[in-house]
Amino acid sequence: MVHSSQSNPDSSTGASTMGADVSEFFEGSPVPTFAIDNEHVITHWNRACELISGLTAAEMVGTSNHWRFLYLHERPLLADLIVSGTIEQSVNVLYRDKPRRSSVIKGTYQIEDFFPHLGEAGRWLSFSASALHNPAGQIVGAIEVLQDITQQKSAELALQAAHDDLEQQVEARTTELKQTNESLIGVNKKLNTSFLTTIKIFSNLIEMRADHLAGHSRRVAELARLIAVRMNLDYQDTQEIFVAGLLHNIGKIGFSDELLATSLNQMSGETLGAYQKFTVRGEQLLMPLEDMAAIAHLIRSQQERFDGVGYPDRLAGENIPLGARILAIASDYENLQNGTLLQRHLRHDQAFQMVLRGEGKRYDPAVILAFQEVITGVISPTAESHVEIFTSQLKPGMVIARDLIGQDNFLLLSADHVLDERLIAKIISFESAWGVRMTIWVKVPSKENATV
Image (cartoon, rainbow, N blue to C red; front, side, top):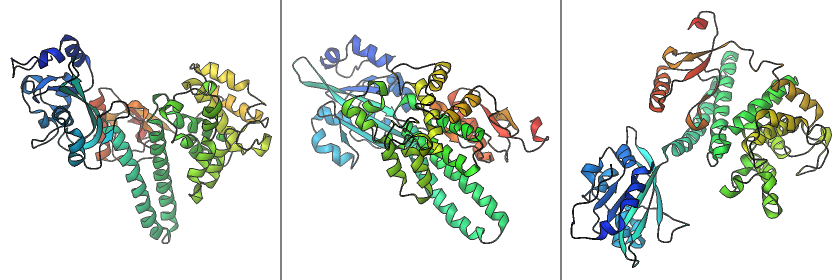
């Protein structure tokens, strides 16, 4: 319930700026939002604020204690600086190197910061404040809006941690490689798992800016891998195609939000020219990594056409790398369904038929045949023995058989990850927090484990 301030009954400020319409806005908003009057007294404290702060509207409205939400000691918030008219002078002092001016509202700042006292492990928040004016244009209060960006920041930190962990593993395992052939096999497998985990996390970060892309690269990579297997490619080539699928959109990382949201068939002129540079840009981003040279080449050639009228090099037929010919089909099949190529989203069967119609023009007929066999189920995606179990059945030592995907379609654990008690407890806590019952695919190395 939204409460009105009772601290200054003679003031008309609250009545003139915080009327019924505003109260209904606060009550219905799922975003943590509060407002203060020109005396820095809280007039509104919505339900979302109560949930994230643990402080109720009953104990906050009518006070000037909004600082308690974020800090242990009293200090002004953005809304206070706006009401005081000191935001230009004070914001950089209070939020060193963190404020960003809003590109939409003049005089408004947006801040991102970590608050260790929120929740069990702290939270990252993005917050901004705007002035409330009376009909005469005078500032009579301010409204402050907050957004929990902990998931995004956690993904960024996880990526950095994965890179750091990979470097440490490489250094430590290099010594072990010199000792025994047995350790060589084990270390290579672990490094490969860490490498793929890092790549998967990075592909998630690329997709976080556009909701319709969530999980897209992972699906493209898996479909491309299955096509490669069907065409009897060796392990190395198949692995390179899989990684290229995960990173095929890396060249779009600098695109504006508007360009990311525009379907290809709506583009023309400069917009289309900017879009078509993403394959070359993707190659350039990966070229400094010597081990990624072959993958970079596949990414460059993914928009070539079998009939020779593609880009950037107008290659034709078998002059196009086979991995790029596979990637073209896998990515187009997914893009037809998520609205990237057309303004409308096709059903999977419609996308399948449209891809088949491109045989000999956009696509290699041999790859089309393998694609058709994969989609129609001629081959099984998995030859290993796997079992799907509930989180309550997980045991230390079990090996994840498939990538574990959490809310918003983002990666939690990569396939081949060995579970321990800490990870199992973490998975169960996520399940409880999300209010869903999860099932997880694990590998079954023996008949004994198959009965779990």
